[in-house]
Image (cartoon, rainbow, N blue to C red; front, side, top):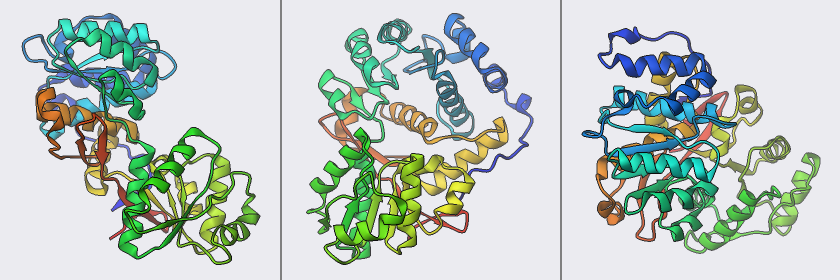
Length: 366
């Protein structure tokens, strides 16, 4: 059972862990994130992140710049997973900055220090530069753009199609026959609609016309009936989590139609969960993610997001396979975001869970 995000203060004495240098870095990141990002990016203290002899995986993150807070949260999650989860403590973390040039330099540094798998970068526009700079070294991009596989990168990010696959699997198991999508006007919503129409036949589900993005909440009942040809659809899928979209989703829930959001809903606050009571969403593994989140809260007094969990899974998979030759064997890796495996085309399959909001608590759907 997952509970909605609630900060919890406390935790054990960090100094008891023998890897004190790692915990000091975690403490610095937690209390002074901008300063810590600068020091991580400019100080070649390799004892903190591994040595040439024992490092095989390099993690490229935006530790400086506008997305530094996110990058630092990802680094903290990976370090905690190594400390508490049994992952080898050999991950080298490097600052990929914000530009392709900065990411390419980080990739050069990673290769020179002996990395045989590079995890990252997070951003699409940096990935081709990293692949080029890495040469023969495998690059596992954290972007969700599957087109990057054409550059030679293995694409590990959570794609719209992965959430749609989970929704279609739920629909098939529940005997639902008709499904519609709430348009959002964005690229994510467009890709979700395409994935739904592509996968619907295999799930024996009929895709209905989409609900227009301009639909007002008070028009939702009528819009759903119109999409269903006069009767309500079984499911309405909501691929994003913007303010307008969530108000539309709240109205959809009130109609009684099963309303399912995307992985973006994992980051909603308690008040939003309360308003979306009885809705579902695609989410992380409810047991593994909750366990790791509890450790993250106890040690750092902050919440761990799904993007941080993505970094943990990517490093865990890289550590488990050891080399690029075994990435395409379709061997599954059970991570925080579900069972994951690569196809031979260098894109990723991920079994996301379906979670239900029930009076403020998030529960897995059986």
